[in-house]
Length: 171
Image (tube, rainbow, N blue to C red; front, side):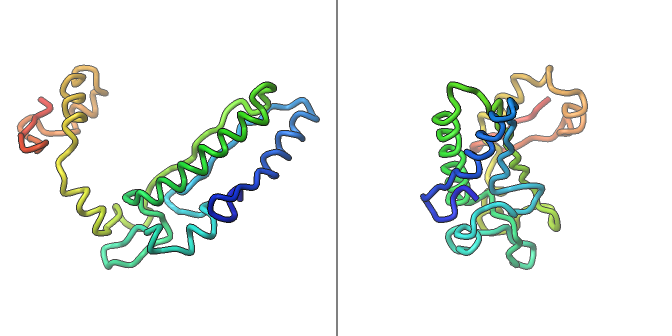
Protein backbone atom coordinates (compact mmCIF):
# COMPACT_ATOMS: atom_id res chain seq x y z
CA UNK A 1 0.00 0.00 0.00
CA UNK A 2 2.88 2.38 0.59
CA UNK A 3 4.78 1.52 -2.61
CA UNK A 4 2.21 1.12 -5.40
CA UNK A 5 4.97 1.48 -8.01
CA UNK A 6 8.57 0.49 -7.51
CA UNK A 7 10.44 3.35 -5.87
CA UNK A 8 7.33 5.58 -5.66
CA UNK A 9 6.00 5.81 -2.15
CA UNK A 10 2.65 7.04 -0.89
CA UNK A 11 2.55 7.59 2.86
CA UNK A 12 -0.90 9.19 2.95
CA UNK A 13 -2.31 6.24 4.94
CA UNK A 14 0.53 6.42 7.50
CA UNK A 15 0.29 10.20 7.72
CA UNK A 16 -3.48 9.96 8.22
CA UNK A 17 -3.05 7.46 11.05
CA UNK A 18 -0.50 9.72 12.75
CA UNK A 19 -2.65 12.83 12.30
CA UNK A 20 -5.78 11.12 13.67
CA UNK A 21 -3.88 9.63 16.61
CA UNK A 22 -2.54 13.05 17.52
CA UNK A 23 -6.00 14.59 17.20
CA UNK A 24 -7.27 12.12 19.81
CA UNK A 25 -4.13 12.20 21.98
CA UNK A 26 -3.31 8.56 21.16
CA UNK A 27 -0.09 6.72 20.40
CA UNK A 28 0.47 4.18 17.62
CA UNK A 29 2.07 0.78 17.35
CA UNK A 30 2.42 0.04 13.65
CA UNK A 31 2.68 -3.46 12.22
CA UNK A 32 4.93 -4.10 9.22
CA UNK A 33 3.57 -7.10 7.35
CA UNK A 34 6.27 -7.06 4.68
CA UNK A 35 6.92 -9.91 2.33
CA UNK A 36 6.02 -12.79 4.62
CA UNK A 37 3.10 -13.13 6.99
CA UNK A 38 2.15 -16.49 8.45
CA UNK A 39 3.71 -18.37 5.56
CA UNK A 40 1.90 -16.52 2.77
CA UNK A 41 3.02 -13.50 0.78
CA UNK A 42 -0.22 -11.55 0.92
CA UNK A 43 1.13 -8.03 1.46
CA UNK A 44 3.84 -7.33 -1.15
CA UNK A 45 2.90 -4.79 -3.82
CA UNK A 46 1.38 -5.86 -7.13
CA UNK A 47 4.60 -5.06 -9.01
CA UNK A 48 6.43 -7.63 -6.87
CA UNK A 49 3.69 -10.24 -7.19
CA UNK A 50 3.49 -9.81 -10.97
CA UNK A 51 7.20 -10.46 -11.65
CA UNK A 52 7.79 -14.15 -10.90
CA UNK A 53 11.20 -14.16 -12.59
CA UNK A 54 12.67 -11.25 -10.61
CA UNK A 55 10.85 -12.09 -7.37
CA UNK A 56 10.84 -15.91 -7.24
CA UNK A 57 8.41 -17.96 -5.20
CA UNK A 58 8.86 -20.98 -2.99
CA UNK A 59 8.55 -24.18 -4.98
CA UNK A 60 7.00 -27.41 -3.81
CA UNK A 61 8.56 -30.84 -4.39
CA UNK A 62 6.98 -30.98 -7.86
CA UNK A 63 8.50 -27.63 -8.87
CA UNK A 64 5.19 -25.75 -8.65
CA UNK A 65 5.47 -22.14 -7.45
CA UNK A 66 3.51 -21.30 -4.30
CA UNK A 67 2.25 -17.82 -3.37
CA UNK A 68 5.15 -17.33 -0.97
CA UNK A 69 8.17 -15.23 -1.85
CA UNK A 70 11.36 -17.26 -1.59
CA UNK A 71 13.67 -16.24 1.24
CA UNK A 72 16.54 -17.39 -0.96
CA UNK A 73 16.14 -14.41 -3.30
CA UNK A 74 18.22 -11.28 -2.86
CA UNK A 75 15.66 -9.34 -4.92
CA UNK A 76 12.83 -10.35 -2.54
CA UNK A 77 14.80 -9.44 0.56
CA UNK A 78 16.13 -6.19 -0.90
CA UNK A 79 12.73 -4.92 -2.08
CA UNK A 80 11.25 -5.55 1.36
CA UNK A 81 14.24 -3.98 3.14
CA UNK A 82 14.14 -0.85 0.96
CA UNK A 83 10.44 -0.33 1.59
CA UNK A 84 10.83 -0.87 5.33
CA UNK A 85 13.82 1.49 5.54
CA UNK A 86 11.91 4.14 3.58
CA UNK A 87 8.94 3.78 5.94
CA UNK A 88 11.24 4.14 8.95
CA UNK A 89 12.84 7.29 7.51
CA UNK A 90 9.40 8.76 6.77
CA UNK A 91 8.13 8.07 10.29
CA UNK A 92 11.25 9.66 11.75
CA UNK A 93 10.79 12.70 9.49
CA UNK A 94 7.09 13.27 10.30
CA UNK A 95 7.08 12.01 13.88
CA UNK A 96 10.64 12.22 15.16
CA UNK A 97 9.84 15.02 17.60
CA UNK A 98 6.31 14.13 18.71
CA UNK A 99 6.69 10.34 19.11
CA UNK A 100 3.13 9.47 18.19
CA UNK A 101 4.49 6.18 16.79
CA UNK A 102 5.91 4.32 19.77
CA UNK A 103 7.11 1.27 17.86
CA UNK A 104 6.90 -0.66 14.64
CA UNK A 105 6.55 -4.40 15.02
CA UNK A 106 7.96 -6.45 12.17
CA UNK A 107 5.58 -9.28 11.30
CA UNK A 108 7.74 -11.16 8.81
CA UNK A 109 6.90 -14.72 9.78
CA UNK A 110 8.60 -16.82 7.16
CA UNK A 111 7.13 -20.25 6.69
CA UNK A 112 5.79 -22.65 4.11
CA UNK A 113 2.33 -23.93 4.88
CA UNK A 114 1.96 -26.82 2.42
CA UNK A 115 5.57 -28.06 2.32
CA UNK A 116 8.28 -28.63 4.90
CA UNK A 117 10.44 -26.01 3.16
CA UNK A 118 11.23 -24.29 -0.12
CA UNK A 119 12.23 -26.96 -2.67
CA UNK A 120 13.62 -24.55 -5.30
CA UNK A 121 17.11 -25.01 -6.74
CA UNK A 122 18.40 -22.03 -4.69
CA UNK A 123 16.95 -23.52 -1.49
CA UNK A 124 18.35 -26.99 -2.21
CA UNK A 125 21.79 -25.47 -2.80
CA UNK A 126 21.62 -23.55 0.49
CA UNK A 127 20.60 -26.69 2.39
CA UNK A 128 23.56 -28.59 0.89
CA UNK A 129 26.07 -26.05 2.20
CA UNK A 130 27.72 -26.58 5.57
CA UNK A 131 26.36 -24.81 8.61
CA UNK A 132 28.22 -21.47 8.86
CA UNK A 133 31.36 -21.85 10.96
CA UNK A 134 30.50 -18.70 12.95
CA UNK A 135 27.21 -20.25 14.08
CA UNK A 136 28.80 -23.54 15.04
CA UNK A 137 31.59 -21.75 16.91
CA UNK A 138 29.02 -19.67 18.82
CA UNK A 139 26.93 -22.73 19.67
CA UNK A 140 30.03 -24.54 20.86
CA UNK A 141 31.17 -21.55 22.93
CA UNK A 142 27.76 -21.14 24.59
CA UNK A 143 26.66 -24.78 24.74
CA UNK A 144 26.44 -24.73 28.53
CA UNK A 145 23.95 -21.86 28.47
CA UNK A 146 21.69 -23.20 25.71
CA UNK A 147 18.16 -24.14 26.63
CA UNK A 148 18.42 -27.68 28.05
CA UNK A 149 15.98 -29.09 25.48
CA UNK A 150 18.02 -27.68 22.63
CA UNK A 151 21.21 -29.15 24.06
CA UNK A 152 19.53 -32.49 24.62
CA UNK A 153 17.57 -32.78 21.38
CA UNK A 154 19.51 -30.57 18.98
CA UNK A 155 22.21 -33.16 18.24
CA UNK A 156 23.17 -36.61 19.43
CA UNK A 157 26.44 -36.52 21.41
CA UNK A 158 28.20 -38.59 18.76
CA UNK A 159 26.94 -36.56 15.81
CA UNK A 160 29.12 -34.13 13.94
CA UNK A 161 28.36 -31.30 11.54
CA UNK A 162 30.50 -30.40 8.52
CA UNK A 163 31.62 -26.77 8.62
CA UNK A 164 34.09 -25.34 6.14
CA UNK A 165 35.69 -28.72 5.49
CA UNK A 166 35.98 -29.75 9.17
CA UNK A 167 33.72 -31.83 11.37
CA UNK A 168 32.34 -30.16 14.51
CA UNK A 169 30.44 -31.58 17.44
CA UNK A 170 28.28 -29.68 19.91
CA UNK A 171 29.26 -32.03 22.70
